[in-house]
Each structure stands twice: as structure tokens, then as C-alpha cells.
Image (cartoon, rainbow, N blue to C red; front, side):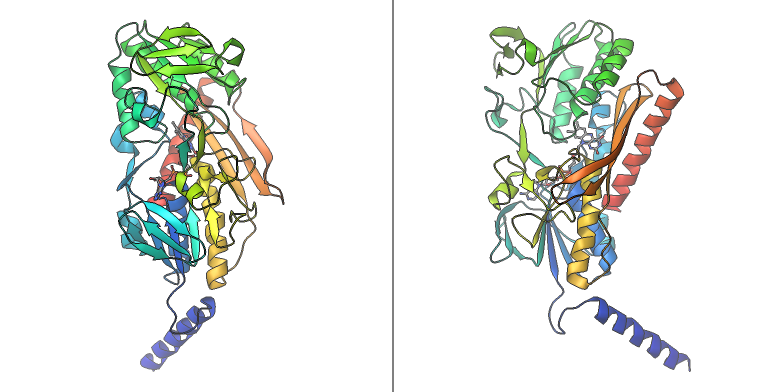
Amino acid sequence: MHLKRRTMLGGMAAAAAFLSAPVALGQSRPRVVVIGGGSGGATAARYIARDSDGAIDVTLVEPTRSYYTCYFSNLYLGGFWELADLGHSYGTLAARHGINVVHDWAVAVDRDAKTVALAGGGVLPYDRLVLSPGIDFVEDSVPGWSIAAQNRMPHAYKAGSQTELLKAQVDNMRAGGTFAMVAPPNPYRCPPGPYERISMVAHILKERNPTAKILIIDPKETYSKQSLFEDGWGRHYPGMIERIGPEFGADNISVNPDAMEVDIDGTIEQVDVCNVIPAQKAGRIAELAGLTADSGWAPVVPANMKSRMDDNVYVLGDASAQGDMPKSGFSANSQAKVAANSIRHELTDSRLFPARYSNTCWSLIGTDDGVKVGANYEPTEEKIASVEGFISQVGEDAELRRQTYEESIGWYNGIIADMFT
Ligand SMILES: Cc1cc2nc3c(=O)[nH]c(=O)nc-3n(C[C@H](O)[C@H](O)[C@H](O)COP(=O)(O)OP(=O)(O)OC[C@H]3O[C@@H](n4cnc5c(N)ncnc54)[C@H](O)[C@@H]3O)c2cc1C
């Protein structure tokens, strides 16, 4: 009796598995390759593997063994977090979810053959491909700067050794020296990121080097959460920060890394630390795969994050041109869940849910002084469109600001669990 019951249950489970996986008997499991193990890629790989219960073969290609988050890297610059707090490894994705994690670079995509070539010589076939390679920099967007100069003038816009280098430069800057930031033009990863960085650099300099100066050279007329940052800088760091906008020539600059000079519309500024954040475009593999437009970003279908160039390919996160969502870890994570649902639906006939997207970007201006901006989004034919938003207000009380900062830590722990556990 007992045996019979067990047999029956086994039979039902097998039938259910067969129904949910419309792959002919004897054929291998459908294969998904994910390029890039960051906010978009790690989330997508984890959700596809976890929710398909082994019905889909998932391979994640990522060159680094530890992913260092850009989010909260500014807090490391400000002395609030340690570098080790930002690093996360891929072991659990492999051990718990059966994801085949390959530490290598994807160097080419053959979209006709549906294969990905790896720098190490391997070739990975796929039924669906997910690209979430983040950003690369537009060559010559800051004349005089190139990747060869990134140790003299770090960008610290991909986290890890660059962030560590910038922190060491700030911490060791001469007394009364000048920290300069060349801010990027739109669109770029994390709109409030440069200005949170300014806040955190000011925080550490106020403690260690109070006569130092901070210069922002910014080609944009306006920037994210501007009134909140300006109010906060006035309260926490009076007289320390100066911003030069395009009206004073900040859209006509060049740098000389050897001489540590910035030429702003013909006026030479001698600086001690120079954080150059160049103009950005989709991570190079998206371009090599022929998935980017003239803008440098990869257009996607708003309802599911599929590339507009290829029905078998999805592009997530910063690399995608999707509409109103800012390029953020929160956005990439939100987009990855929509794409994972669509891929499982296509490959295993699982239920398809309507796409819903959301984002919040928190920034820390000073100790316990957190602010945020965010919105919900819905797909239209043309783009992912913002439907309702919110933003912190100037003049909020200290307790609300402290709670906003606490909320950001909760978000950090949540997204890391969503990507790596
Ligand atoms: C200073 C700073 C602060 C930020 N703060 C926040 C914040 O508070 N909140 C927030 O939501 N966002 C924040 N962001 C933005 C956030 O980091 C990015 O928007 C997010 O990481 C984008 O996710 P992604 O998957 O597109 O790219 P990434 O997370 O960068 O992942 C891309 C991955 O692809 C890999 N890769 C690239 N090319 C290849 C290849 N050819 N083959 C294999 N792998 C490849 C890379 O190694 C990388 O691991 C911040 C960014 C910065 C710079």
C-alpha cells in the first residue's frame, strides 16, 4: 500500500514535469547562456535556474571571481564601509541552483549559429542568450584621457581595484589639495552616483584634510537630486565644493594626466586627485554581437527586455536602451526578473506575468543623512514609461533622513540575496 502510494506520487510528479517542459524526449534541456554576472545577469541566472527546477540548463559567463558592487562603493570612499563589504562570490549560484558558472570573457556571439565564444577557446551553444555586460567608456569623450591613464586619473565607475585606488588617492592627498571630478554627460550609470561620491569624498576630507577643495567639472545643465545635494553640501561641507557647469566651459575640457592638469575652456586647473568619469555606452560585447544602435546602447522590447534585433536574445541593465528607467542596479534587477519569467515561459511553457518594473536610488550625503528618488514603470509599445515617482524633500527632519539611510542598507542586503544566494 505504502509502495503503491509512493509510485503513484512519483508518476504524477513525472507527468507534471513532462507537461511543464515541452522539449522532445531524448533532447537535452533547453540552454540559456547569461553574459555578465552583475546586477542584471546574476539575478536572471538565479531566477531562471531556481524557478525552472532543473528544466533549463543555465550557464553564467563572468570573468571576475568576486563581484564588487558599485552601489555603496561611495560609502567605502567616505569611510563608512570596508572594501570587503562590497565583494560577493558566485559559489552559491553553482552549488545551490546548479548554475554552470564559467569564469571567462565572452568575446563573440554568433547569432545565426546561436553560440557564444569565450576568450579561453570554449564555445557555448544557447537557445536563449541574456546579455547584461554593464558599461564601457566612449573613447576620446574626455580628450587626453584613455584607459591607459586610469591609474593616474581613475574612473572608479566599475568597482573593485579602481575604487580602492581612488580611495587611496583621496586618503593620501596633500593637505589643502584639490580633488577634481570630471562628471559624465547623460545617459550614464547611476545618475546620482557622481554627486553621492562628491558628498562622501567631502565627508572624509572634512575629517582628515579640512582645507582641501573639491571641484566638479560638469558638462550637464542640471543633475539628479540637485537641490537635495546642494542643500546637504551647504549644511555639511560649507565652502568646500565648487561646481563648474557648461555655462562656464565645462563642456569644453581636456585633461593632462602626466601633469595632473584639467583644461577648462582654455583655463588650466592644477589638481591633486582627478576622478574622470567618461561618457558611456553598452558593454563592448553588446556591440560585438551587433545588438547596439548608433546611440551605443542596445534597444529592447519594453514588455520583456528582448533585443529589438534578435528574438532569441535579451539585454538587461545598463547596456539596454529601454526608456525612462535610470541605469541602476535596482533597475537591472527588476528587468532581470521580467526577462527570466519570459524565458521560462518560452522554454518551459510556464505562466507569463505582465511586466512590472520599479527603481529607487538612495544616496548618502552625510552621516545618517540619506535621500532617495524612485518610480514605478510600465511597458508601452515605444518604451518603459515612468508612471509614478517620489523624491525626498529639502528640509526633511533628521529622523526621516536616518530612516531613509537604514532603508538603503535593507535594500542592499535584499538585492545581494536576490543575486547571490
Ligand atoms: C559609484 C556608483 C554608485 C552606484 N550606486 C547605485 C545605487 O545606490 N543603487 C543602484 O541601484 N545602482 C547603483 N549604481 C549603478 C549600478 O552599479 C549599475 O547600474 C548596475 O550594476 C548595472 O547592472 P548590469 O548588470 O547592467 O551591469 P554590472 O552590474 O556592471 O554587471 C556587468 C558584469 O558583466 C561582466 N562582463 C562585462 N563584459 C563581459 C564579457 N564580455 N563577458 C563576460 N562578462 C562580462 C562584468 O565583469 C560585470 O560583472 C551605482 C554605480 C556607481 C558607479
